[in-house]
Image (cartoon, rainbow, N blue to C red):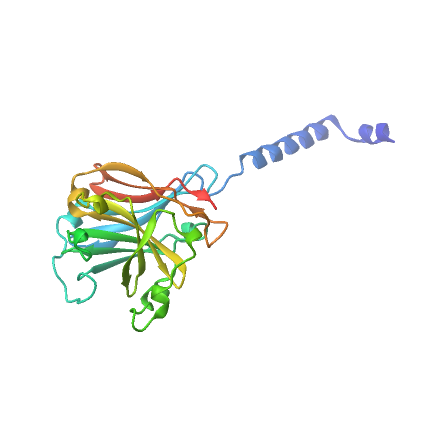
Length: 267
């Protein structure tokens, strides 16, 4: 029976079938994620006389590799020095959407970069600086966070396993932000002048942001630094990519400062 079927297939037909089969194998082999080795960008916003924008990069397999924000040198040199706010350190808020591609695979929802012309309490942070909050909740959820008197969820603490062991509650509980946690071994807590640090934030017993905090003076020194992002024992949101490092650098070609979280790992 097999011999009869083979006789019915012409040599040309056999060769065409073989080519189609091999072509199908090649197509399958070359198939890859459309995000592989790509960088995607959020909307550009105005800051001073310059701009800022969010971005995310993906590795060769299309998995998240880094997420960050760029702020132009012209923005940093023309920052407003006062506003009409009367809140936590007279902050000026710059909210940035994150590209949808990164929000699907990481816990991050949006970025709010706070500009503090006079710094803010406690005294060691009373230097002109930025707080770059990488939030894990929506903008509406963040804006609904009240103060200590009106919102008991603001002072609730996560279970210890959800915060790095070295992080302590410094009793800085801020409306529309959350409770702040600081690394007990940060240089500024040991008497050194504050340049940059990493803050964890929480609300309602949940970790809701990572916050690289850095002075304007440090940024304008044009650093090229990468730091360990200390990890908790466990993450509350599962099966997502989380950063294990953060850093700062100056991009001379674009004349922009770059602040990022990277070395993403699936947790």
